[in-house]
Length: 383
Image (cartoon, rainbow, N blue to C red; front, side):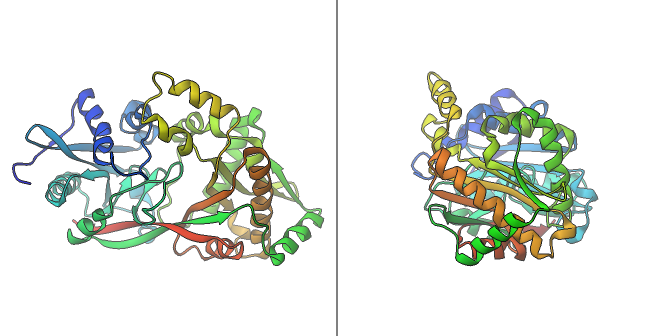
């Protein structure tokens, strides 16, 4: 495709065109889940996304013959710049993401513009795709195109992988999601571990109390920041981001699907499970009008879903090398498994993403007979 024009977006109309493009590009993909357009606009609008309190971004559109044919974001997270380079980010590392393109020539032109913006900002290395915070939708889908993504997970065209690698980018990290048939009981060894934990008076696995949302969120965040602090790609969540996440996820927070493990009365582990909202929003095609809002509200009152997603688990670092860590994990998974079947009609669970080098979590997933169902890949290149 020749005569491609790449331009930075500078208006509300451009942001709308940025959000609208995937609806055309994925119109014939049965596994793409259209996001709610207002949510997608909020992601790229600084006043509506707390991530921008410590980050900046430039969005680009590609045009050909008056039609939008591609998009990309280039962005810099100032907190990521302060992290240990051994964990993936660090000084001089910028990112790009939210990439969609009609063909390879459009992609190359978009990527060149994003990279040049990063260079102009003093960046020396690029990671991508990360859309836009590491806590949102990191990585490119490279395996698992044949089924829908769950809530807060991305989808992509298979050809994107070749385009990125042809542009000189090398894989740096894989993020894995695991599929689990939750209708089946766990292996006997896991059941014995759970029963042993139930006899241990030091252990308490409790439901969260949604009426104390802020207090419970603070407890989980404290465990998360400790448990994940050494992980690749870790950037601590800030108060504005926590506020935004709370507003977004509170409607799909249910007491029996989120558990906190206490040891001697101290919170030391947690597991968050969410009913797969994608099942409810997919038929809405991005809009709550005219009757989508009523359908979604009805669904939120008592979700009945096929799939539950576990986006986050964590155990404090002091326990991570101990048998106690896996015991607490198995107990939380089992209790949520039972609730998911009994109260929400679920038959499937998806755990992840899990870093490819997180042997502890991968071992837990394997022990309960999970199988990898999707692989997302993050790439890097020196600028």
